[in-house]
Image 1 (cartoon, rainbow, N blue to C red):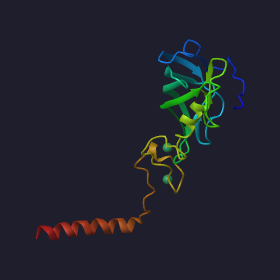
Image 2: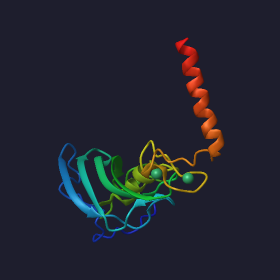
Image 3: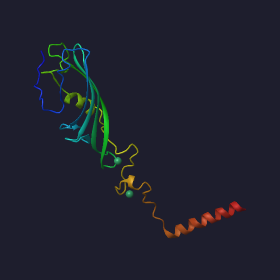
Image 4: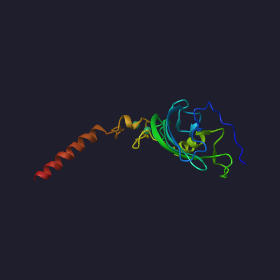
Length: 186
Ligand SMILES: [Zn+2]
Ligand SMILES: [Zn+2]
């Protein structure tokens, strides 16, 4: 039999399922705002601890246990891999997890019902963390930094250092232009 860790009923991601237990075919909708747990993310991007996660879930009693499907809406805070600025975003992730009754046969790493409760934390981690980009961008077309001076190019897309033009050459090129124009007229 599997090794259960005890679920903490006070954790916001632990849900009561006792109305559903052993009543295959019954169903419950959960719409709930919970606080984000710690370390829900990777180096450059993640869900700030304590920020709101909006859960929209359907809990369905099935023969093996309880099937959870739905979405988690989370805030993201990241550092853009191109311009290196911090940015914020909201994203919705799909959740789907089957929680087994303790006496059922399932894979070692399956999720289990314990004391008529389920813990969404591991499923939420899988759903969110595996989807996070390794090179997060503040926007898809972020222009990054100027390779010469390091300025953020999103602030000034026309930014350029140009070519230092010697004033004498400047005059010459003006001449070239007027000559060319004259030639065209002839
Ligand atoms: Zn950026
Ligand atoms: Zn520059």
